Amino acid sequence: MSATAQPSTDEPANESVDKESRLRSYLREKAADGELYFKSKFIAEDVDLSAKEIGALMVKLSDSADDLVIEKWSYTSATTWRVQHA
Image (tube, rainbow, N blue to C red; front, side):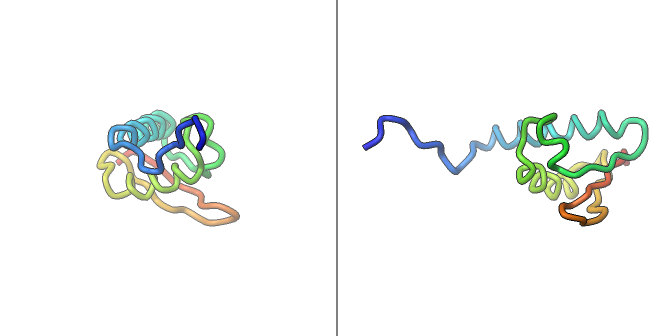
């Protein structure tokens, strides 16, 4: 038996909210001067999230972020997202 603890696959709700909040703040800031187009893999390091986490959160934010307009813009090797202020 290993002495190290295995990471849980279930993330705490407050951690999920923190990730969502961090991404939302980043998008607001970057879209402040107009539209923002990006692929998750190119902003992953900036928001300290994986591209997969960003993709999942973008779908969630597109439904819940009243202050942002979020669209799947195109798909060429990965989804390109378009974000602007509402």
